[in-house]
Structures are given as structure tokens and as C-alpha cells.
Image 1 (cartoon, rainbow, N blue to C red):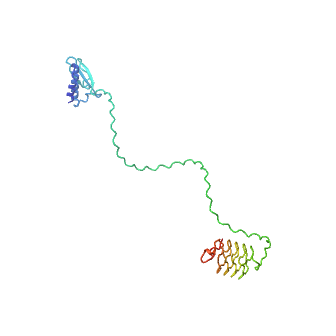
Image 2: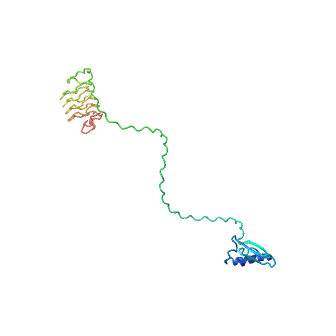
Image 3: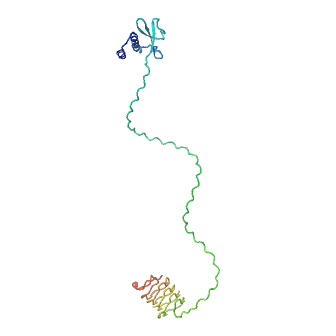
Length: 264
């Protein structure tokens, strides 16, 4: 098929061209036979052109190194010369995204790095919160005895009541201290026994009745605002329109009482 194609596409212009063409076809047909020297080791085909008859004979230079005297030596390559580089083809379309590959195995742990340099000193921190209150210290030694104070005001448990009078520790059982314009404001009645005493209509604001005994006493219409009665015995006391130590009035409660309202 190759020989026919060559013959049809090449029309010889003279006897030399026809001879060369015939030699090429012969060489092509005989190339598959075991003639290892045609073409030679460099791929060159050697021929002898008869100058009289125009015949072209392909020779094996390993056996016939030279052409006869009446012939011209011709050589040609079986492989044609390198053609020109063709134009760059059009870029193909982008292929579709491939399937993601499997996750690779975890790499080995790297070696421990060397110790880095010491960092710069940080800024001063803010002041911390105040600590909890410390435990109370041990009691100190007893101080020296002070000098004698001035003599106190003499008092009598039978004295007529007046503001600030000191009747502490007196026994005034059944005493009637109620009188027109009587005033015991600021009086000291600490630990005084006033069992069944009549203390009605008395001004007694700020009076000290701490530890006093008022069992059965009459405190109707008395004014006791600010009085100290935290530990006063008040069993059976008559409460009527009495101004209680906390500023309330006994008539605000039913039955009337200042119990529960004895501290300012």
C-alpha cells in the first residue's frame, strides 16, 4: 500500500528521478528481509546509478563498498528530515474535579524544639483585693487601777421624783410616784423594785429601767419613749394610752400593751 501511494503521488521528471524512486520502493519492499546493512547502521541507503541505462541499483556497502566505473554513487536517508514544528494546539477543556484522596496517615511526632529565650518582664499587676479580717488577738494584760473619781450625787430612795434622779436599786414597792407635773425623764431606775407602784401620768422618756421589776405597776398615760426596758419585768403591768419606748402607743394594740415594743 505504501509503494502504490508513493508511485501515485510522485511523477518522475527524468530517468534519474525514476531510478531513485524505483530504488526507494525496492529498498522499502526488501527492508523486512534479513539484510542488516541496508540501510547501514546510520540509516543511510547506498545506490549506484548506471550512467548509460539509467538503472539504479541499491547496494550493501558491507559487501560492495564502491559503484562500478560507469555508475554514479548515490545516498539518501530512509528517514526524511525533521519537519517544522507544528502550531500549538487549542487548550483542552478543564477536566472535572477528581475524587478527594484518602486522608494520609498521621506523621510522626517531631523532635522537641530547643528552649526559647527568656521573655521580657511583664507589667506590674493591679493591686489585689483586700484580704479577709484576721482573727481577734488575745486579750491584753489588765491595765492599772485608775485614780478615784469624784464623789457622786447623794440620793435618797424617798426623794421627790425629778428629771435625772438616781433611784437605782431602791425598793419602791407600792410607791405612788404619780403626781401633777411629775417628771422622771432620764432617771436611773436600774434594778429598782417597783412592784405594784403607781407610775401613771409620768414623763419617763429616756429613763433607765434595765433589770427593774415593774410587776403589777400602773403605767397608764406614762411617756416611756426612748426608755431602756430590754430586761425589765413587766408581768401584770397596766398599759393604757402608754407611749412605748419604740414610739408606738399601747392603744394601737389589742389588748393594749407595750410588750414587744420595749426597745427604742
